[in-house]
Amino acid sequence: MHGTNTLKRTPLYAAHLEWGAKMVPFGGWEMPVQYSGILDEHAAVRERVGLFDISHMGEFLAAGPNAEAVLNELLTNDLRNIAVGQAQYTLLCNEHGGIIDDLIAYRIEPSVFLLIVNASNIENDFTWMNARASQPVVLDNLSDKTAALALQGPSAIKVLPEAAKIPHFGVVRLVVLGRQCWVARTGYTGEDGFEIVCDASDAPSLWAGLLERGKAFGIKPCGLGARDTLRLEMCYPLHGNDITEETTPLEAGLGKFVSFDKGTFVGKDELARQKQEGVRRKLVAFKMTVKSPPPRPHYPIFSGGRNVGEITSGTQSPTLATGIGMGYIETGETKAGGPIEIEIRGKKFAAVIEKKPILKRGP
Amino acid sequence: MNIPKNLKYAKTHEWVRVEGDIAVVGITDHAQHELTDVVYVETPAVDSHIEAGKECAVVESVKAASDIYAPVSGDVVAVNEELSGAPELLNQDPYEKGWMFKVKISDPGELNELLSPDNYAHHVGA
Image (cartoon, rainbow over all chains, first blue to last red; front, side, top):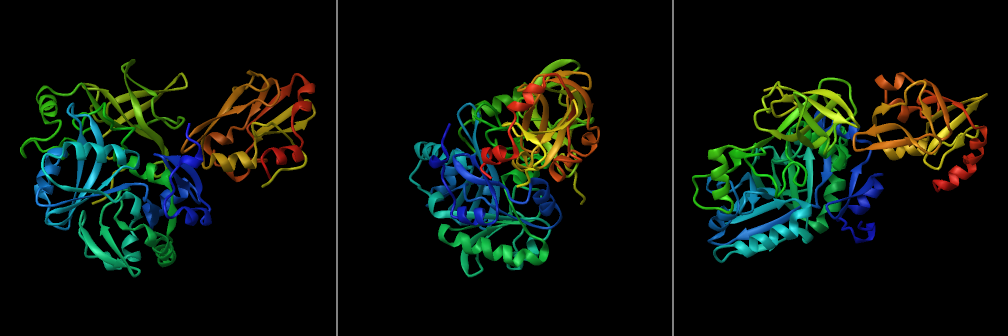
């Protein structure tokens, strides 16, 4: 166990306490899990707008004439498909195709990329990428001097009208409340919104300023609890739970983020073999069809009375008011609409495999 | 924090209201606040026997499942059926509408092991 004294704090630590956050350890950081309550914050993001501190996440810069080529050999997606000002979801895999991390790569200059990686993987990713860069490249870990906020929800655009022109998965350099930021139209909630990357010292004034601006639109500060329920309704994988070094992009249903025609990349051989031969298990989404305790990670999944897998993420969906989750089950039992059972404290409860995302949205 | 004077308390954050030989049991205001939004409550079965200090129920929030411990031993004579459809009563009204179950006290001496309101307040640092 780590004591709280060994946990890192974001530049917004004092702001979280001021806003009444309940703080918890997460990925080596002391982070807000909730302020007003997970259900309340979740609803704010689905219906209005919420503001998250995501400064625990890591930011790397990759730059130089070889940056694109080097990253394309390390990451599974093809960076040649994005132009300046565009972002791409991608994966960092090991030689066995196991997922070291999932991340978003932003091309911010023709030969400069911003990578946003998961908090608990920062050191590991950075070491890995440095060790395997095939050509000279500038790789800089900006995580300690950089903060990030996520402004998410249908009213995010009203809080940040100056970002209205940014397309979905676009990124621009923008002055927000007098501070120079990178603003991207990306997120982890399934709602419209922005991720704002700024200098660590600018974070407190941006946090306060955005909450002030958002008052008129019913903004709420939101913690990791709501971030988790929001992302799980959308079936966005959480690294460490749904995807790990023991699972591959093809097993996780992330094959569309793996480019087999871009040349060589770490993990390609094994992933190509899996693609040809098929995978033995797949990450499926499910929804409880009876009243049950919330499904949780590691609960066994049954199909036809047989244990076919286990849950990797589960919760009570605030939007659907029922248990939802994801888990790996044997290929062959993964068809959407298929009935399964979740074993919870020795009792089996009925559920159904859902096509992803679990939360179906209008056009 | 609300710690009613007419109740007894377990260190594990359950409250007991003694009504003759019946103990009405729930979780404290402090507990509901720490657990956060309650979304599921699993009460013990009516007629089941519960043992003081042993797990007898589960309260689940969005984030976690938490065991509830029997503050006294005895047979369960009633459970709050309303919690099945409205688990949020534990958050909204932990001492009244959010009661969890009633148990016929088998050893009244166990009540002396429970904390007074003042001692419980001290226990939770209030």
